[in-house]
Length: 124
Ligand SMILES: [Zn+2]
Ligand SMILES: [Zn+2]
Image (cartoon, rainbow, N blue to C red; front, side):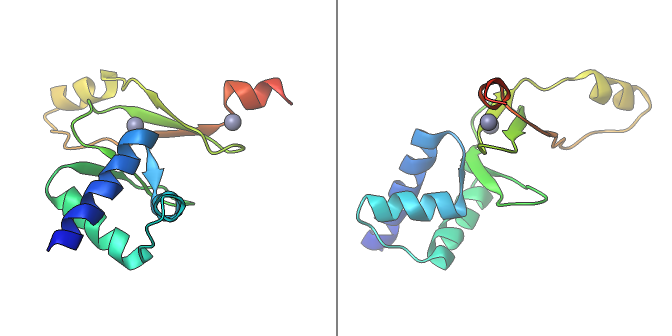
């Protein structure tokens, strides 16, 4: 039980530091800090944290899903195809409003913008 608590704390600490982190990133950072944890163990911890609404999983079509803290206001993401940087961007509410006018209710919107970030564009 003691061990589970510290695993959980260490995983959360990495997500806090990174802002967004994928499973392999978390594994790598844990290893760098001297804690070897199997991917399946990390995954199990993350699923639990997700079901407790402590972290949120952002599903990525081609690549690793990433995790961030649930308490943050919902936002969209921009992912750089070159350096992999993930940037938070404010969510546009307009589409939701027009859907709601039609009588639909929106549970969740996941929008991900893919492209090149400003830094990568500068080096082109
Ligand atoms: Zn970039
Ligand atoms: Zn985010």
